[in-house]
Each structure stands twice: as structure tokens, then as C-alpha cells.
Image 1: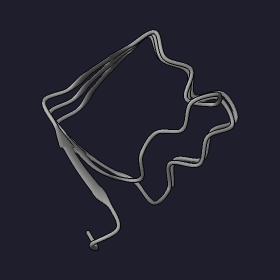
Image 2 (image 1 turned 90 degrees about the vertical axis):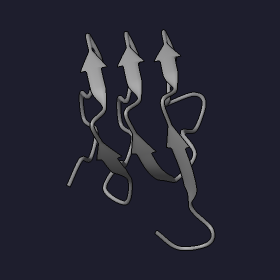
Image 3 (image 1 turned 120 degrees about the vertical axis):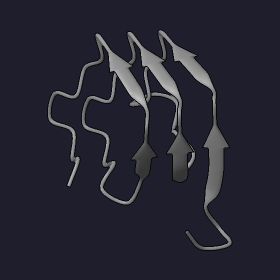
Image 4 (image 1 turned 135 degrees about the vertical axis):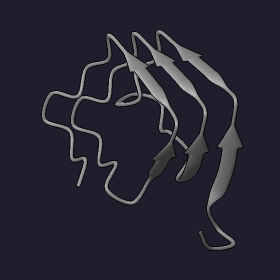
Length: 64
């Protein structure tokens, strides 16, 4: 992680469309994402550790 990246831990994200509202670039630890949309979102530079994704949409998203 570099100085320009966020570190977010133990947060809950519910019913959020991240194709409309950008997710802050960085590292996410022990976060919960429930009913969120990552459609067409490039997550390849993000780091997720111990996060839970429930009923999320990753259609056309870039994960790696």
C-alpha cells in the first residue's frame, strides 16, 4: 500500500452501486459488502482481506 491509498477496516457497505459512486482505492480489511454493484468496475488495484461479499454484482467487472 502506498501513501495515496486508503486503508478501510470493519466497515459495512449496503445497497451501493460502485459503478455510480467510486470506491476509494486502497486496502479493505474485514469489510462487508451486501447487495452492492461492481458492474464494469476495475478492482484489479484493490486489496480485499477477510471481506464478505453477499449478493453482489460483478458483471463485466475487472477483478485481476
